[in-house]
Image 1 (tube, helix red, strand yellow):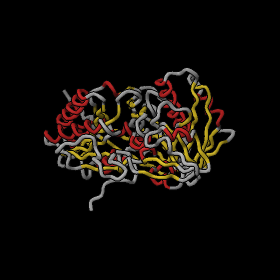
Image 2 (spheres, rainbow, N blue to C red; image 1 turned 60 degrees about the horizontal axis):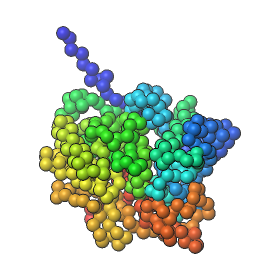
Image 3 (cartoon, rainbow, N blue to C red; image 1 turned 180 degrees about the vertical axis):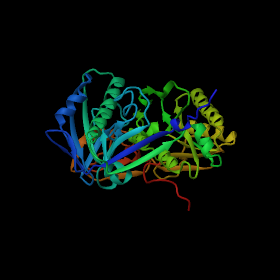
Image 4 (spheres, rainbow, N blue to C red; image 1 turned 135 degrees about the vertical axis):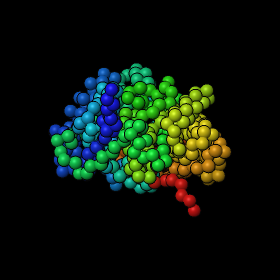
Length: 439
């Protein structure tokens, strides 16, 4: 019997065609030309209102440097659309449930979608396009299209959340699809081999895996992979290129400062950095999804099973990132402990809530094995944000969102909040500028 070498066929290759967006403008017809994205509001609204749970939808635009505040915001999404390869972006929502992570995907840079309107819960966030608040996230440097979603009367909160989530994903795909006939401004290609092939190609490089801890606590603290809520799954291995190609989306209504919005999954900086070092400094084996439950038994199950997978893969070390805070720190520390006990070195990526003076314990749980920890800021840091000339959404929600309070809105138009209220300010993937530095 003749054996056939199929390793070359098993290499995944994803090309990101990047288009730089200089501005977004409303127009009579949707198109993309010379860096300007033109949006026909009526056409896009009709597309979104194919969902019978939407009563009405409007749109607004926020640009870098404008005196604009957006609040509340549920999710932030980077516009992407697949040009070739299997599947379609955001499989299970925009595309069918088919494997992504290959072929070519068009990406709109310096541009995002921020879903707003009448939002379900109290844990949504703020984006300021200028002033002090703009320093705490990258979204203020982007051209933002804001769908303002009004659901039908009497809708239950879980259907409401799903309606807003899917509308944001469909808007992002609609925008990026406008670039399909154009030549990109730049191209970046990633390759990732099968485990068998990379083992043969890089036998002397340290084998590293990334543990991506994701929220799945229910009560709209949820994350979806290929459209499936990760709440009931055992920890699983997923290819890094699938993550970059929209396989994971956020349904998470947790604290805005440290929830992973969909844009964070699409541009996960830990995955991007490991891919860029793959085959040179290290062998990036893949991504392990480990869910964060609210129950201790389920936390133990997830951490044990994640460490079992790591041992089966034979990895030498790993990076573990948290999503959210409070009881997810137990998931983080259990993952750390169980891996270290197996001789697998760990680096943890988190943020802290250590009081406005920074003097309190920053994490709700710790373990002696956690001796390499990166923190991405203190969510309790208090700021007074200047008055903006224009507000998209409803400023009154600032009184009830995480990090805000009944007195957050000043008579002079200023907004007093903890940075937990600012979307992505303490992103535990390290997406923003706050991080740990050795002195």
